[in-house]
Amino acid sequence: TSLIFSGCWPQNLATPYSHPLWLLAEGLGAECSTAYSARTTHVVAAAPGTAKALQAERDGKHVVGPEWLHACMFQWHRVSEAQYPARVKQRAGSSASAPARAKDDLKAALSAAGGGK
Image 1 (tube, rainbow, N blue to C red):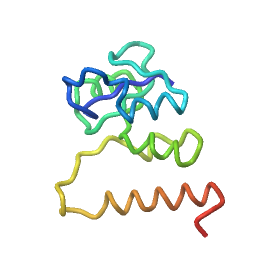
Image 2 (tube, one colour):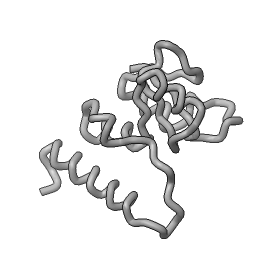
Image 3 (cartoon, rainbow, N blue to C red):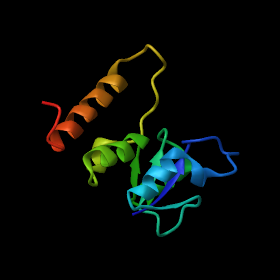
């Protein structure tokens, strides 16, 4: 798996390879890069519609939200990308869907690990 990030941290971040999402991805076995290339298999995007996300969609690559990496970590395997698309962030207090999704993800991870009963 070769991935890049889009909109997950400020563009002027001098050391993206020390960002927690980058470190998580590498810890899961992914190869991370700062530039889109033919080798790129996934774009982890904070929101849909970024230049990198649009390029990946045109090329038939996976575009996922950062939650995908967390789900892979919690479940100890590569989970379906279709369940974790990049999403437009809701304004604070406008929706309970993100916390509810996070709670469901945690329950699923605990269940898959044999716990949480």
